[in-house]
Amino acid sequence: MVALPVSAELPRLQLFTMGRTVSSCVFKCWEEWFMHKSLTWMVGGLVMGGMILASLGHQAEARPGYLKEFISTYESLKEEAGSSKCLVCHYGDSKKNRNDYGAAFGEALGAPNIKAAAQIVEALKKAESGKSSVEGKTFGDLIKEGKLPGKNP
Image (cartoon, rainbow, N blue to C red; front, side, top):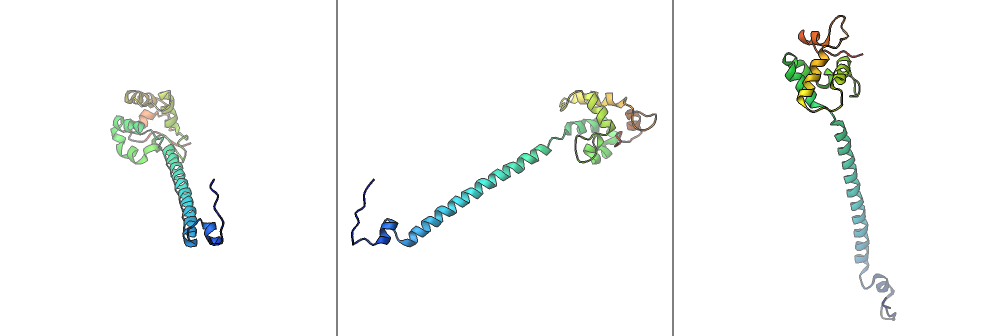
C-alpha cells in the first residue's frame, strides 16, 4: 500500500476524494448505485420471465394427436369435435377430469401420452364398444348417430 503524504498544501477534501472533485465522486457513487439497481432489476426480470414461461409450458401438456386422430377417424363429428376440442374427453378446468368416454378411451390406450397414430386409432375403436351413460347405447352407437360420445358426471 502506498502512503500518501499529508501536507498543508493538500486540502482535506482532496485527500478524501483522491484528487477528484466532489461532483465526480457523487456522480461515481450514484452511477455505481444505479448500475447495481439496474442489474438487480434486469436479473429479477429475467427470473420472473423464466418463471412465467415455465408455467405456460406446463399448461401445454395437451394431447393434440388424440383430437387429430378422433377427427380423422370420425369425420362426421369434425365440426363438433373441432369446437369442443379437449371437452370430447374431459370436463371442467382440470385435464385430470375425464368424462365417461375419456375414461374408456384412456383405459383403451393403456399408457399415458401415446403418440403413435395407429395406437390412438386402435384405442378409439376399442373405446367404441364401451357402455355410454345413455341407456342401452355404446359410445360407438352415439358416434354413429352424429353425437359426441362423452357425458360429464
